[in-house]
Length: 302
Image (cartoon, rainbow, N blue to C red; front, side, top):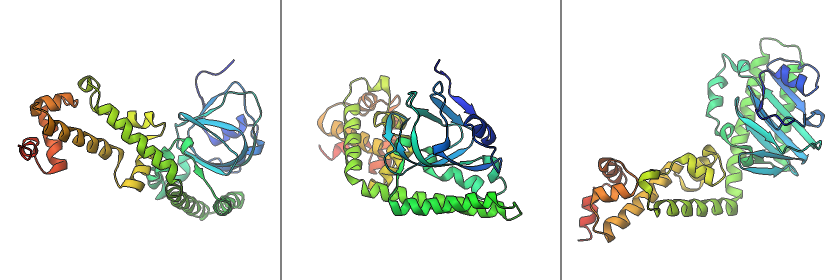
């Protein structure tokens, strides 16, 4: 019978046990061979209480968010504690190569990375926004993970944590670099996203029941585009220098200018039709973005 609630794995030791792997050499950090992982057909979703970084290639399909990927090339994924990882629900045994690196938050205590790790936006990306690696990049990432594995397999001393944390920071820095490279090299795909974003916002502000719906939320826009909010914001900042919220405001101001210049509606009526409960909020935003009040802008056309 299929498990309705995600299976929660609270510790790395528990994860090893459930995957029928030997006990980890270190209870707070571990690298496992994905080809040796077993999958319980009744479990379709898993929540880890620790960070996971993975590099996989082979013949399998995993769902993240609203999309799926076939791992026919080297793909990296990052999940933070508490995020849900879903499989495809099939009974087939995946044929995968690669590794998964488990890092428990407790391992990072009393290190700068304990706070800094929360600033890496890719831990907030859904894995359908995974990182695609070139062969050269994959070799580099594999070498860093090999160093981490060798270090915690060695005799643990007072330097072990510092060495491993330094390798983790190096791994995350390269991940940031490679994600930015991906934003640049996938211009065609990203251009389609930008076009789609423009259409979604245009359609939204052309609706007649904006007061009931209110202003569009970043989460709603990201859901429509089948992206996580953080990935969408990162992509937009890379290509346009603006966040998703700034794009929403830009489209809002465009619509407001159109209504101010082509209709006889009052500022209050325009604010109402654009989804504002209070016209003062609309006027304040309009002046912040244009350096003019709505009435000053309208007077330019009279």
